[in-house]
Image 1 (cartoon, rainbow, N blue to C red):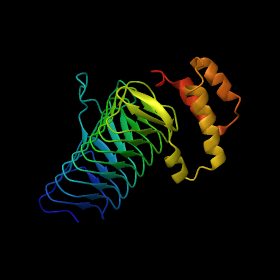
Image 2: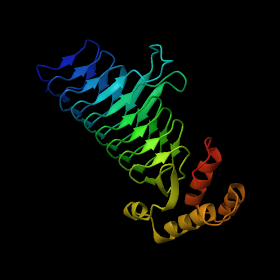
Image 3: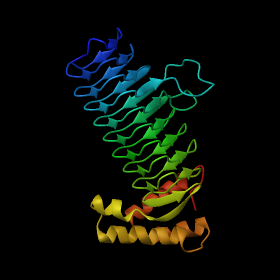
Image 4: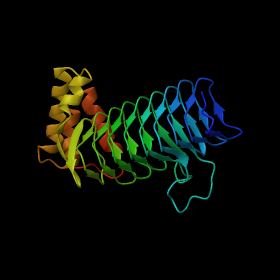
Length: 254
């Protein structure tokens, strides 16, 4: 299952059924789980753990040094879960000791060509990042987020669960859960109706999220007052938005 031109360095741990195509290079601290496929010309280096049933396409680079001048060869990591699709020329860099030392990608993510996931980013599950999306360092992407092509995220930004970013949007602040945003800098447009319907949210749940969105973005209330009114809705989904807002360090788009 390993092509004769591939280089697997001593110390690498590769499950027996992993497929490694032509001219791939696997470093000595790499672990690759069962069912994963590396098409060709893939480089996996550093202390990188790749889970089960991932498919990685040509010229992806995973586990190389972070693009951070302070990095001094510390023993940091990349951890990738199960069932991810990582397309051509994707780059995923090691973490740094300025954070927890881990760049993490969860399960069942669809990462398209030329996406860059910088040091210390934390990507959840079931996300889609379209071509050319760029995550600066320490960015957090929660579950079920969709980022349109050439989206650009400032370091330390967070994107809440089920949010949607339109193509070529730029983010300097956080985006609460369920919000659809567009522009550079991005501004809120609506809630992600279509995404929520596809994921089985009931009309009642979507209706409550819409009420929370209106209080947050359509009421002209100051942020603290809007959040106070949102709490009166007594909705778990709206509470998810409130919790996200109250934990925001960069403040939210508004």
